[in-house]
Each structure stands twice: as C-alpha cells, then as structure tokens.
Amino acid sequence: MATVNSKKQILYNIDTLVTMTASGKVNWKQQNPSTYFYESKLTDDNKYITSIQKVLSAREYVFQIIDERTKDSILKLTAKTNEQGSSSLYHSATSILETLQKIESAKAVKPDPYTVEVEKLLEKLYRTVENFINERAASIFNDILQNVIPKE
Image 1 (cartoon, one colour):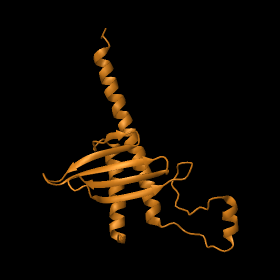
Image 2 (cartoon, one colour; image 1 turned 90 degrees about the vertical axis):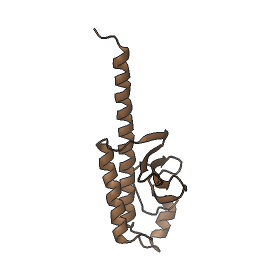
Image 3 (spheres, one colour; image 1 turned 60 degrees about the vertical axis):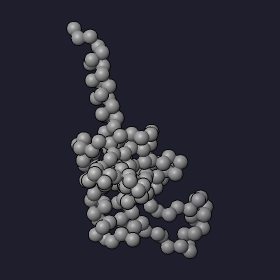
Image 4 (cartoon, one colour; image 1 turned 45 degrees about the vertical axis):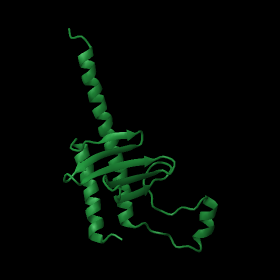
C-alpha cells in the first residue's frame, strides 16, 4: 500500500501532467476513441508508456504507466464515475429502496480523501488530453486546408 507521502507525490505528479498537457508539453497520441498515450524514454533500456483510458461500459478512468520492455504495470489507478459523469466514491446501493432499508443499520461510508482526489485528477487529465488532441487535430486540419485552398 502506498504511503501518505507517495500518495501525495502521485497526486502532485498527475496534477503536473494535467498542467503540462494543457500547455502542450506532452506528446499524447490517440490509440483508439477512448485511450490516449505517450512514450517516455529515460535511458536506451528504459521506455515507459503512460496512458489514460475512459472505459464507458464501467464508467471509469484507468491511468497506467507500463514498462514497454517487460510489459509490467508500474502504476495503475482506476476511478469510477457516476451516471452523470462526475466523480463519486460513495458506496451506493443498487436501488433507492435498498439504500433506505440500510440507512438504519449502516453507518455512512466516507470516501478516502486520496481516492477522491485521484478520481478528480484522472477525470481532469482525461478531459485535458482529449481537448489537447482535438485542438491539435483542428490545427493540423487547418494547416492542411491552408495548403489546399488557393491563395488570392
């Protein structure tokens, strides 16, 4: 289990990645409609793939760092979202009726602050990467059109 300091460092690093992505400093690529990735090469032998994926069927975000050589997952974080798409960690019953029946006997479960923060950051990262990719595509498309349309 991650320590408090390592959790804080992970949150800080994800937030930094959001900022770097928003300023165009990370070369994200789109693997498929719901997955974005970029490659990092620390040395000739150490190459890592960082990805953010939105799993629609499970309504969750998956953030991973994978060692390309060994295919080992170095870090994997998952954050579920509710039906409206906003982050939520509260344990919900399958129906309103079940929830009402359990209120008397169960204590409210408070979400772990680290997990809540991970959810917020992963959702923010995904949206930032998605916007970056879309803006880059629009810019490239615009450049292509500029070379196709005759200049007057």
